[in-house]
Length: 136
Image (cartoon, rainbow, N blue to C red; front, side, top):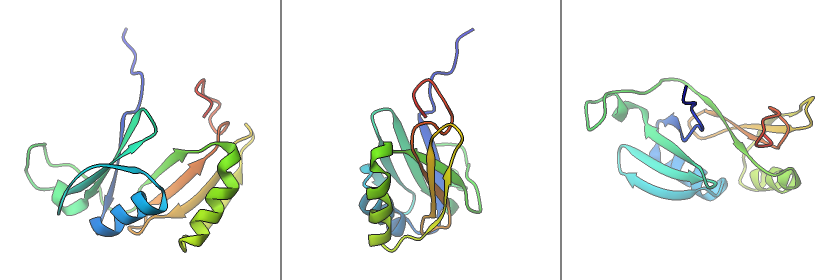
């Protein structure tokens, strides 16, 4: 049987695309790949993944794709190197982002939890959280 090899896209749903674009591009430093005003902004994450940010109400309308979407805050995690943890904590603080919680995991990884402007719970994780072959 063929195996699924990767999670390529992850989506978040927001209520303000401009604020979301600023947050993910300027605060988290993701590379903007494309955008459609009033509908979405797309970001590259590392070398293998894409982060899709949709205006929640726009994805419920019929368009080139079937209507889809979610309501309420979601959760997702971005991987960072362990050596970058302190600089990320400082960067978030400098942008006025409140770190809600930090966790040291039994496998050796560490997590920083905070919210994006739409209330989604964002996590930065260091290797060791899941003990995956890739290091995460």
